[in-house]
Amino acid sequence: TCKQLRAICGLVRAPYLYELNQEGLEYNAASASPTVSFSQALASLRCRENRWRTMRPITSSCRSTLNESHFTSYSQNIALYVSRQAASTVVHGDTIEHSTYHGRIDEITRFHAVDVLQDLLVLLRMHIGTGLSYLCFLSLRGMSPHSAAASPTCVLLTGISAIGYLSAPLHAHGLRILGPWCALLTIDQPSHRPEVQANTLLLCNWKTNALFKLAGIHPDKVDDFNLLNSRILAVIHRASNPSRLILRLYDVTFPSHLSSSGCVRLRLSLRLPRIEDQVSISLSRMVLPRALQEQVLRSDQRPREVFPPNSGVMALSIPLAVGVENGRLDIAIDVATLISIARGNDISDRTMLWGEWGPKTSRVFLINEVLRAEGDVEPLQDVEGYRIAFATNVDCSDGRTRNSDGHSRPAAFILDFNPATIRWARQEEKAGRGLHGVLITEPSVLRPGRLLAEEVVSSLPYTRTMLEGYLPQHQIRLSRDEVVYPANLVQGSPLHNVYSFV
Image (cartoon, rainbow, N blue to C red; front, side):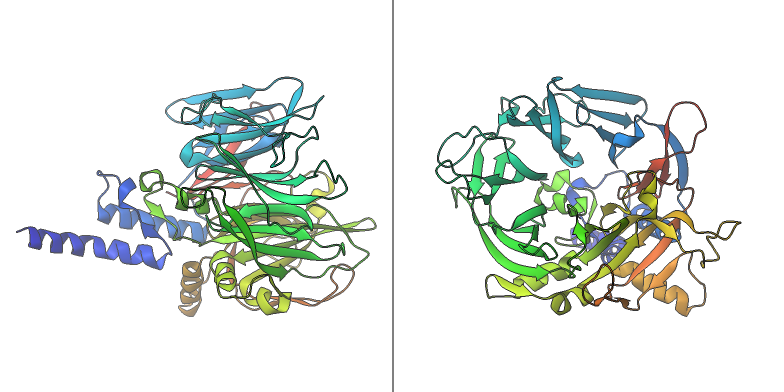
């Protein structure tokens, strides 16, 4: 009977759904393949997660690439390269397809954003002579105007304001995509009061070309921003005191039939670790897991196995310098805990010190930037889900990674903050089987000194696994199932190492 068949189907899929839940994932039936059974999906899930944790990929291959210095992202077999003048993709399938977008020679790309699941690349282009800026919506695979974008597929931004057109160039901080929305944080200077500056959230619906400007952003200088979800905006602000960095969370209401104009309201201000006054702080950046973009898409556009809403880790990277000494403060933050802190504060515009929110929510790394002596690769390289690709100098006291001459050397690691991975690692240690990497659960304590003005404690647990074959100064990119970075070739065409875990 139908009832018996439903019961049998439930028994078949129950083990898979249970283990999927244990891994912090959810099943999305809308994108499930009819040719893959639940037993096959369970075997694939177990294999993938185990190989990630032991850093033993199923396959290792080399794939053709373009200029490594412009390597931007890699996901679903699509490698993206963006320079000031052009954007290119290499799509790896049964054949290798190359596509390139060449803008006008008197224009440059200031910012770009990509959403692989929507096959979307958005470029913020600027005319060199006039400073005029516009958004360009392209198909990621074809590097041609996106078929779902409104016509025209370029939207002029310079001069858009609530009081009319301005001639001043667009002052923007970053570019983000969330579903149908492209977002920029801009600085407005009213024509009647040019000495006054206001931070404004500029929204463009790339499917309708509708433009909106939302006030309500704190006037402090902006370093970077991102959308945690469709309701929360995160911004790194720099207070008037240059050593004060603040992570501010805002409630955002996007324009809709319920709210024709939208609005922004400051929810919470979170103090970041305090830096010594004599230390110079360069532009900080914020990196979010691309999985957060999936939550606002249709179910059939999302992967078959998806992260729950508001999960994963975000990362902040803060460049520091004092004299000739350079350093970097990198902070991994659990997204779910961060959002729960924001939602748990009913008082609008409350300020919390680092000691009130940071220690249990984050893990902080203070790095001496040896890696950047000969190149331009940052220690914090990429974030996907709960994993972070991280490059640093291996301490010479670590016997497993020491050179023959005993000196330290550059190396790369995958840091995994997934609670399921932490449980697995603890079970492995308890059973005496050992780990391929290292489990870190003890709090780290950074003492005040030359760079930090206060003691910084952080305790978010994670595992650290070395990525074999990493080359200094090279970019690492993560996708859900792969790690990609340039291969070491003496001659011939440039290639990428691709480690696949499925």
